[in-house]
Image: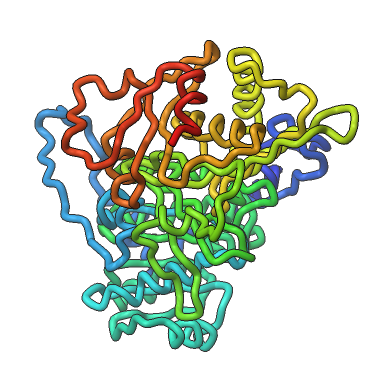
Length: 461
């Protein structure tokens, strides 16, 4: 009998050590190393893993010339969820391994069950290690989708799961969640570093050799990163983050890694009692419906991947009550806000040194597009001067340290989105409209090159 081999893993970052140590040298956390058995047992007979990876007759891989490899792009599976298709890059790729992470209760299981039910022509196996079959049935009854091709399995042992896969032969596999699975070939608790890595490796081998797309639901840590070893995110093809406030109804699906598409795409959903509803025009929900004109509110045009969004920037500038002025930012980079305040004070002549400044991005979004600089400055000027920005005006431009308004990319999409939502004017950098035919737009494009020009044209009319 082979000697049992053990090693120590950091439960926080997945670092490995041959002996126990108090502080992890990789992530700096204390008392996170636990001992786990890594010696695998002899593979049994009749399971999927033995039949695919344990065969001695399997031919060894040999190098091939890149030009000699025949490649035929396989068609993607297009779902009824346009938001998910956009985030994935056009649909589900055969043989892909997709990891979806998010906070507890954010709607990960609801999203995956809704996708499984919305594909009646695809045989889907939904494997749940956290809920019983009755609980999944209760959630499915509330949804508007129904499918006779969706099968549910409540199991956590990967060998049992693969036996059912051999019988059912599904065309799409959903695992909820990867931290609940355990393999009998690794002697450690479910959710441990070695178990998560082993189970993911088995599912990845299954997906690549059979061409079956696999969706994995993953837990996240209190810092917001996906729980388990970092190698988990390297193994999968796509990593999706499901974000949002549990107390609000809107959810955001972001891509942090995608081997088959862009990583800048964004999908927006609204959580309802019957499931998640796609938000086709997110700009409408990001603009507050106001009955009266308010100071310190400006509309900025931003881009998330290929999708233009108009969002509302709210600011409040008031004299500091205490000695040190406060600088608070929600949804916007605080360092970027401090830079814009310094530019407004140095180049615009505004005395902001003794003012409290609070900035908020409406709708709960977190933005990082430099094109919102002009809208942020307009919002700050509006609150400082106690004069509202015209409701028919929006902004798209980056502000430099010299007070210049710099051009931003995809200005045509931003202008078209503003025109579609009924805005009459949009203020952009004059360097962004070179070679642009402005006659095809009904909206008035106001070119500016300095903050002074923005200030002069802000309150006219």
